[in-house]
Amino acid sequence: MIGILIFPDFQLLDASGPISVFEIAGRYAGAAAPAIRVLAATPGPVRSSSGVEMLARGLKPSGAISTLIVVGGRGVRTPATCEKTLAFVRRIAKRGIRIASVCSGAYVLAEAGLLDGRRATTHWARTRHFLASYPKVKLEADQIFVRDGNIWSSAGITAGIDLALAMAAEDYGDEVAQKTARQLVLYNRRSGGQSQFSSLLELKAPTGRFGPLLTWAREHLDAPLTVDDLAERAAMSSRHFARAFIAETGTTPSKAIERLRIEVARARVQSGSEAIEHVAQSTGFRDPERMRRAFIRAFGQPPQSLRRAARMG
Image (tube, rainbow, N blue to C red; front, side, top):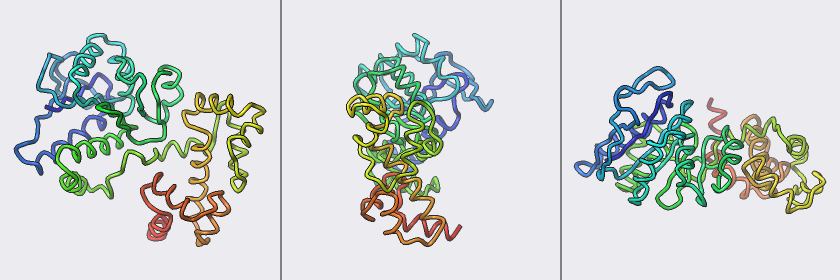
């Protein structure tokens, strides 16, 4: 059985997205597909942040649960501070089954202690608060979903669909997952290593302690911009700078610079006919192949595909 754990003011698509994936994948897989059940601390109708309600069952002990997915949403503080819910999650975790979170549902897993020392992710907008609240978690803020053993976590809303598709691939094979993605009219099933696109946008107008530094870096992307270069600009030792930067932004200096380069390069690739080689050189990638790999990690497509799509649009 697949359990979907919700709460008042949950995000509807965080629940309905994975539910649809498992429903369609199960249809393709046949009799082997497990049942899907919606769960909540208080059984009955549970109102989402949109006002639409889902009918949930209570948190009764169930050895039938093989996968538990905790959704996110505005009301996530309720389950994250509800001992009944946390005890249920911990009890399920002791069985070693697959447990996942969508978006801010990661707060529930973190409060239950399941993410200590583990790699995880959550919605990009919650990165700083999450880092400050749960320093023991190895947060990978720019990933759409992360798997660490039997614990999975995903970024906002549609990333929960990507996570569920990856689970379907694990359960039923790639062919079923691909059929499910096509049925959902998804262009492509994204891998967990692909970056959250919104986290790229956040760096377009950086704020916080290192905002001025990132603004300066954006204007000098053709320079090497090594950690030592950035630390010197920030008037800090390299080691202290790297630690402080990760604590502030949720990512490493090198990843932040790559994300700035990707976003600037993407805009130039899509908006004109400038040679790809020249874009790569002037944005600091130097090698077009290096830029191509970075684009695939970030957008799931090489620069040439983005340019063609922009021209068709």
